[in-house]
Image (cartoon, rainbow, N blue to C red):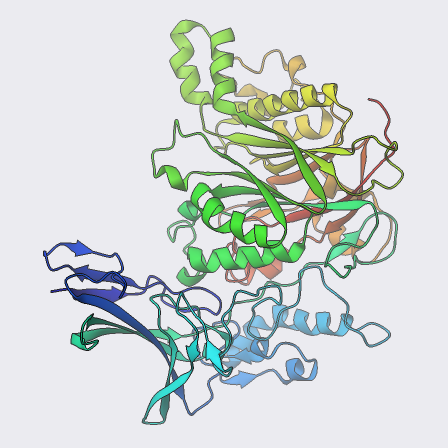
Length: 603
């Protein structure tokens, strides 16, 4: 007979908006073990599985700590209540917790005070609005609350909410009838119970004892601190949004670049300081989606996005928000894991703003093969390929604007834009490989530039700090022959150094913060730049490394930077030790720039 052997939940703490999928191990009548579902529509030898979820609601109101969400709150900040800050952020589990968090907590008070303008109206923020549950107003996927007339959760049909029983000051609400359940705001602070029973298909009676599991108390999803768009075009203002949530300047467009941290790399061994629930993919994918959609960029360049997550989650979810998707998976000559978990680069663009013209895929493995065939002696080819073949790729998209580049186009002429998205090799000892990959990409972009007078963007995780040879090549168009990175060249692929050049007039978008005069937020942002390189102090922050690896470069003869997404402060991240954290779900930060096209001049 069908029997349930074991039930457990992969995540130790349930979070609002993050689907719970229990692991259910079954023994089939033939004694084989399986984890496959046995629904009523497909019983096995006259038996199927029935699932129920309950919320155990105590008569005593429970609040959870905003800093340690698995702990009960024992005090509340009245300053937050007075300032109308989301109530979930006002609770703390102890006086020490409140004292330790004060440096960062008081920022909420400062933001609340500055967010009220002279007319008493709250200022719109680029990164959406968040309610007391921590779930963004842009997130419409959460189930309705139990206080409404009916519930829908998992794949279960609508049915009336029911109080099933009361016992010892507790009320048990039935909240779901499918295997999966997504906690709602009404579940915060309460324990959930999952019940799995075997049912006789004919009599509809349960057979044997059911298997139950209790969760920890449900916690709200932490809400990332809103990031403003700072104008660098000389206009003394913070970026504002139009009715669609996009920047309202006419004739401009925005580009986001973000390494989202592949799930296969998000291990507790690497990121032991991040709570396991915040490191889990069910939580991170929803938090990342909420963040990405909240930026409302016209073009989104993501790196380290697994092929299965692209196909099953990001492509369909961003499609709902009006984005068309392009994807290039890394090659798998080196990778030995599951082919579906290989990561790659994904470029999304708004269908109402751009149309797809052409896609180019750069596989550095193929370029490595061509290079070794051409310049490496036969006896060294195997050694050369072992060093150069690293599976990295780039995705180049040519898009056509559906809006007018203000003052920049000739009537009737197509308004094209070339966007390169790449993830360069990570190994720090392979400085020659990094530089060769960047040089190879730039030479490919030069060919596109020669065939069409087209503005260009080069985005991605270059795994190269400011001042390194790859950064110099990108930003300066050449590499100093005496640059220390050139000393590492066992294959002789970087010689002569005079060949390490390109003709694209590339400039790093975030260096615009250093070139501007005075303005709201500019001084603060300048303090977050390295004055020796005019690049951010960091775009990547873990316990063991902090520095800049990510960039958005643009062709300065055809584009100008209008505004930039504000950089984050290291102190604000260190409250959670480093990235990723419950607030930010990648070890990188997102970069976003707003551009305007210049009048066309032939290069």
